[in-house]
Amino acid sequence: MTLSFWRTTTFVLAAACVVLAWRACGSSRAARRAAADEGAAARATPGADHAPDVPDRHARRPDRSGDSDDDPAPTDGDLSAWGITVPGWLRWFAPQPGEDLLAYRDRMVPIAQAAVAPHRARVARGRDAFAAAAHLDPRQRAELDAAVTDAAAAIQDRVMQGLLSGDLLPARVKPSTAVAFARDVLDLVDRAQRRFTAALRDDQRALLAEHPFDVADYLLFSTRWEDMLGVTE
Image 1: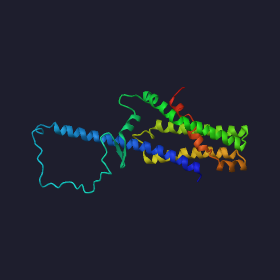
Image 2: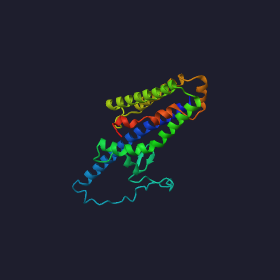
Image 3: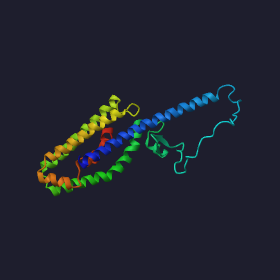
């Protein structure tokens, strides 16, 4: 396995974990709301307000010997899923009440573009440095651009297919679906890598193996994924 394969695997699996965690957090919030509604209904039952809470002297107190100040309970604003607590301020990055998808897109895309901009500049410099070091001819540079462009288009088509079918919607996505999606994306990235390296000479392939430039890294950050959302400059 190459470094680019594992790096791409990390990116894709991280995205899959975010989607699954979003789904789990949404389910836990719904369960808490249902429990709160049941409690409110119980308090509204006639006679409930006149029934004093009498402590049971024979009831066993909870054992707190294992409690530790190093493991505090999550606050009300925090999100918890699979034993992992996420700070509540991350809710700001989720759609807000009353915010439609277009408003959410317009709010988040500039932040994502600002975060990605340094990496786009970095991979562009890496591409130019490798092209100069390997003395790529115009045909080889065109093959790199074509490999990356075609792979990005195929990935976008795969994403749209999953969204339109509902398979990638946070409320419906399953672990098996996320794994299948990750496998398809990894295959497309690996295909772009092999397509570009096939256009190189043996000495250029050896240089690519030692050079910091990586096709998967270049594909991830050079592609304007925001165009898929209809964002215009």
